[in-house]
Image 1: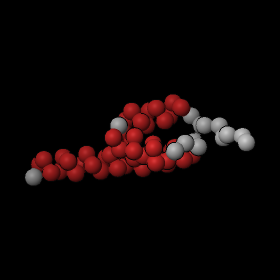
Image 2: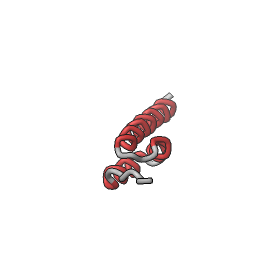
Image 3: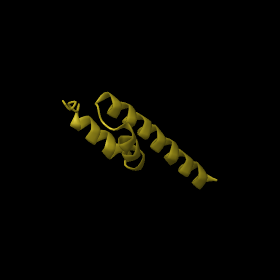
Amino acid sequence: MSQTIGIATGLIVSIVFAIVCASLAGGRNRSRVGWAILGFFFPIIALVVLLILGKKKPKTA
């Protein structure tokens, strides 16, 4: 039972970090899906890197 709670907690934390990273990435003109995946598998690292990168300048045609 205790192991199940640990796994469920880890999964919930990963999902929350994925949502936060996707939201931040969208506001910074970056790929929401890519950063959500990174945020799910590498939560703290993805969030820190995303915060360090800052906004991406839009491409001009």
